[in-house]
Image (cartoon, rainbow, N blue to C red; front, top):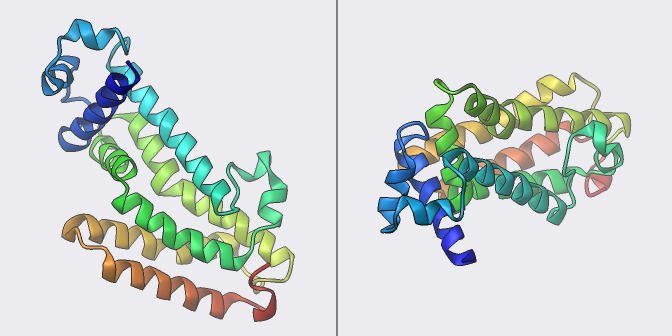
Amino acid sequence: MADTKEKILMTALHLFARDGYEAVSVRNIAEELGMTKGALYRHYKNKKDIFDSIVERMIRIDAQRAKKHQMPEDKYDTMPDAYENASLERIQKYTVEQFVFWTEDDFASNFRKMLALEQYRNTEMAELYSQCIVAGPVEYMEDLFRELMKKGVLKKGDPGMLAVEFYAPLFLMISMSDKTGKNGDYVEIIRNHTEHFMQNQGVNKAILGG
């Protein structure tokens, strides 16, 4: 049963990413899997239930990845200590890994494409897209940079503007990767960008690793 539920989830996600959430029906998902709608309903109540399960998994994966890289798993208000203890070295490595994750991981890349397709016609999708791909990452970096400025690791400045400057190339490279489907050069660009950024903004290279 678990395998069937997983197949339904992934098939639905692929269809949502290809055709858009609104355009895909439960019947489409069932037909793609070669099952009846009744059989599908034994695993999920409706299409929204499938979508909610996709979002819950994405949130769980994102938190697990942050923890693995010793980065904050949630917003600053819920775990300030994690932001205060972050280092430039970990931020740099995590940023490169996030680019690879959002462009190459099957679940993450299709989740992102689903949101991108629907953001202009579905307010919930638009909010998720902003929090996962646009405003959310910028706010995350702003909080990290503000704390690093307080510690004297980064030069004093506007952490919000610095976050935009840091994140903008990552967002651009994700978009370019979607067009070409080739990541090698873009990964190197992101790696070089993050290294250059840290070198320019770091106050004392001896403490960049935290």
